[in-house]
Image (cartoon, rainbow, N blue to C red; front, side, top):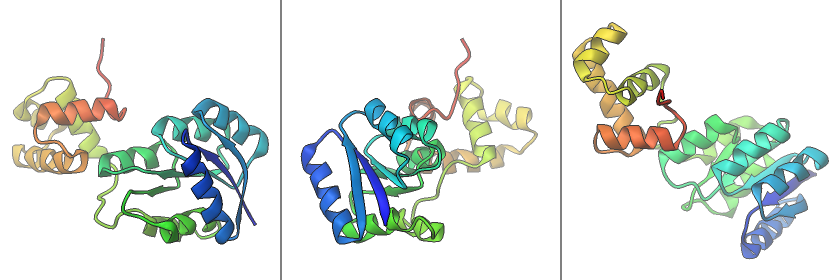
Length: 191
């Protein structure tokens, strides 16, 4: 039987997760309202799965209980889903997903392929290595021509990468892309 720890600040959500888990053959062994309290519980109890509702919780649990699978509930945009996966989440349940998808994520510990099916199929995933490089160059204030010269790629390739970055980060321009990248921890700004 799959053991589950739930970290969520709303009692109603914790109760709903407990009920859905019970129906699917998983057992909620503990609950917490705060990320740090939940991470400490995860470190002590070593549950199979930890259900969380924030990137902060994903990071805290990944650090304290690296062997537990982390399921993030409530992530809506592709950038947030990508950041969750990069931060240590094993699965992400969006607002459009229901109890079937949630149970698949929680109970498929032995079957990681199923976890991939839970995330939105239209999600393009995290930025590629090259897209990260282009975004970092943007954050450093470089123009498209300067980025092309710095990375030894054509101007057209830079523009293609920018289009992909805008789509994945749900940005409409360079400033929004850099701000999203900063918020998600994808770029560093030198001081």
